[in-house]
Amino acid sequence: MTDRPAATASQTKLPFILLTLMTVATFGGPVVIGIVLRGGPSPEWPPDRPVEWITFVGICGLVFGIMVASVVILLKTQRKAERLKRERQDG
Image (cartoon, rainbow, N blue to C red; front, side, top):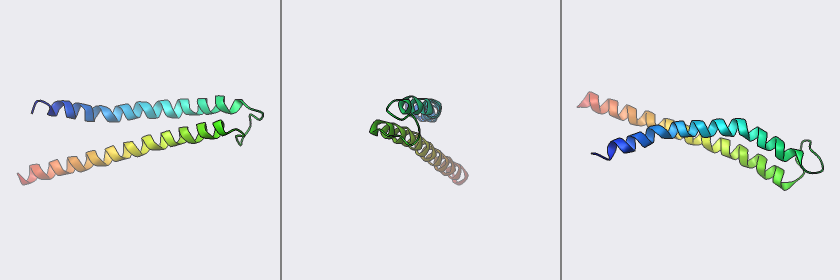
């Protein structure tokens, strides 16, 4: 039972790590996109270089992935809490 608190501690840190990553991605992402879009022959929309599209899609994918991971963790945490609540009521 000594390794159980460590597992719980790492599980409680994960949402905060995802929140930090989401904050960096949502504030830093548009800055990176803007910097990359300024290069090339046309600094306007739509992007004219593959690197611009890759950056745009990559950052949007990163934000989406973090959002999905956050929702999955939320659902798992809620299910675990409901299961523990039922076990306490039954036992």
